[in-house]
Length: 501
Ligand code: NOJ
Image (cartoon, rainbow, N blue to C red):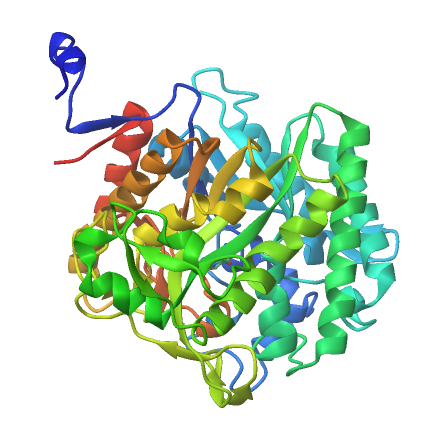
């Protein structure tokens, strides 16, 4: 403690990290991953409702479009959101069940959201605190009728997306002030057009990739303008999946010089840097000249994946805040014959070879060597800090408000009793928030954090096995049980702080 802290020691608890007064705590979900809308699967209203049935596309159990039957359990789920005590909730509208054809908007599907929104905004119940809503307009899923006409590759889809946005504004515009147009355009494009593991299932189709990129960008721009025309004070952004990309050379160097890490390593690996950039120790002494080759896939991926869509939106003047979805780091070794991690049969010229983290590397926020979740994703809170404090991020985002719109831990259930005691998830949340707190102290304009996910759900091509939720769902009975992490997160949200010990 420094002398000033000592003087105020009764107010200053070194074991507590406080967050700003207006910091928002929330959880996130997405329509197709939880709803189980009865028409969607039976009438094949969306591209994903069809994809689930294609052999080999989605790992069993697929849930047959039921996900966790959120619609059937709406009252219960609303009560669990309220009881959590977090001030915000991010959900997505289901474009496919609402927008069933040109000028064909389904009233019943819209009314389901009315109930959700009215309850969470506490419109008819003054005993509840209103919850701030962040609405995602589309979270990966396309209405089948649009997918059949070329999806985002067809410029008409962006226009229809705008029509749908205007209908949502008509119905719910007065209740929702924060809008996320598109969720993870980069993941949608990468899985849909490069590895082909998601709809529309195209592999290395760079032509389609660029057309769809253009469509998503136009869709974002049109929706942004419609929402701003509805109310210029409303805030509109999109959610970007961001990884921490690192060259193997740098990761290995840092692992063997753990105490020498200067804290600026992210800038060495990120953005386009000249080939003679040095890695320096904490005193600024040059330690080594970096190997250039490993940097190539990391830098290219970083640009394409993390930055390009953000740059496009900023260039168009259509971004009031950035949503960041962060899960892990990727380490690359240069290889012209690398395999695409999302499709082991595919030789890729962009990915480089994906490597495991060096074992002796210790994350600065956990103090531990690499740990992996059940999907094999490295748990690396330091990566979140490094992305958000990188030179490139600061240069692009500056003082623009940032929300972590997703960050979560997945495990595969072995024993449902034990799995409710999810200490690994508690640690995950605590360490990522430590990383965020440090980034905020260094100037990041972070306004809130949404844990992914409120509840166990459908994890796309990986089916129902991976569980990210704070709330456990029994896949036979659909019974909901809050996990230890639910109570832990509830404490954080209510106290607006984290305890370090
Ligand atoms: C980000 C996606 O937005 C979400 O749908 C997914 O479940 C999580 N990542 C975990 O993979």
